[in-house]
Image (cartoon, rainbow, N blue to C red; front, side):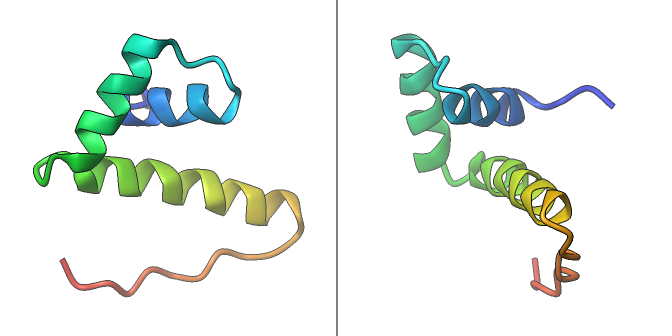
Length: 65
């Protein structure tokens, strides 16, 4: 599965490899109600990965959309 643009931007941010233009795009996406869920999902994927790397199981998401 190909990572979304939001996922790519979040990964670059975490790796400190985000250009100024990409940072502006990330901020615009986070502030755009239509895009916020994509960024939330990308961050959730990252945090779930951290939990797995530390031997913990991520909690099942029970949010209501």
